[in-house]
Image 1 (cartoon, one colour):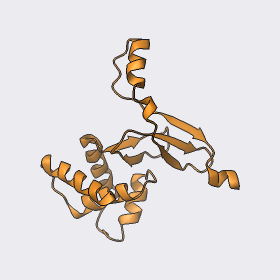
Image 2 (image 1 turned 60 degrees about the vertical axis):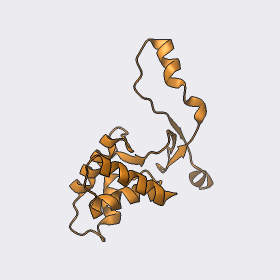
Image 3 (image 1 turned 90 degrees about the vertical axis):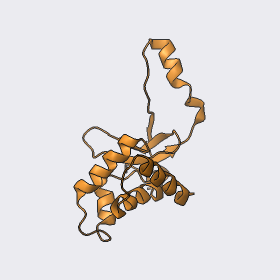
Length: 142
């Protein structure tokens, strides 16, 4: 499954005439394999041994590119570093207020929320995000 997601993303990059560098491939693969919603620094630290000449700026630039193309979402939370999420399906996030862990929540019942919001407000809604805050099972057990 993850392997197919990497292939699909690479094909999308090729169709957009974007060169597939080893670093670009590794960043993409890391995002797909790790559902931890990593920061750019976390991605950099995990790949720096494989790519000692790669800079944090390279990671940021590729994440911006992936975000622009549309298969990575940047999740900005106030002053904290942005986290990046590979998205193949619309989903939401449950966030632990204690340790900061972020878990994907797939809830198809919210797909019509934009249309409902448009009807209620008159706004032309472009997108939405939902976050749920609480304490994760690991932190509850402490």
